[in-house]
Image (cartoon, rainbow, N blue to C red; front, side):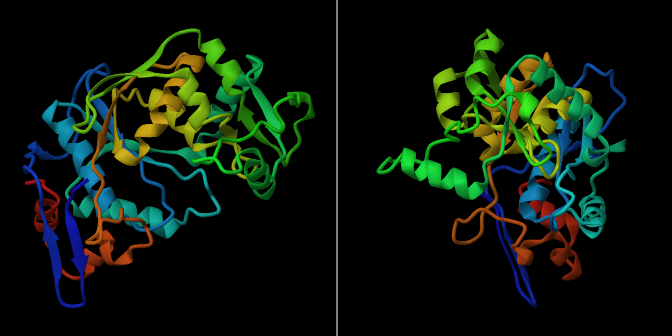
Length: 315
């Protein structure tokens, strides 16, 4: 997958653009006064580090698609992991996005303030008989997986060590898992989703067997934060009436899990736009540890926002 490649040195910043350059019909605002059923998307970063060029590309893509459709882009702060999220990283998110010329609808949703909503969703799944407590440590899971699939081509999913434990046994140190077999049976319908992104556009049918094999009994609530990415994101997207989810292609394989949870919880079905990933000169996907490509580094080096946007393919 090719993308914009950037490198920042002490004296110079270089951006290389590939592909056509989208234009924003009404600027970079990603917002207009539209009825609630109109186009709505979101940019949802986690304040666990400084934003890099990959985040900039994702935010600009969401804003562009919203502006192009006369819709709304929302900002959501995904800060459920309180041990890793820091106030300085959250402050930098707002500063970096404003520097890029982006605006968003207020108020900004923060996951740290929505524990009640996640608890309610989890309680519903528990009441449906789809969950069980898990006390396995990561070391125990690795050991079980090694013994279970010795010589296999790919690592298996969670082996179900605690699957027969009733929820009545759940303790404060347990994680809560979804029994995938029961969940698929409870869904009782063909799972599918619409992809609008450039790589794999069209209608995708979710194979129950593949979902069970590749994802298995996913964690719905971690013992340290009381929820999980999968559960929180589907609850929040529904609460914000998101009609199209714009995110990186690395999350494409999570979409079947999200569709399953949406069906089980009776939530609306959005469309999905998975965009290309921004990579460095060696082809490696950018991560928050890549400080040389952090937006704040470009700002400090005197980079012009318009030039950075252009380097990512946005006029």
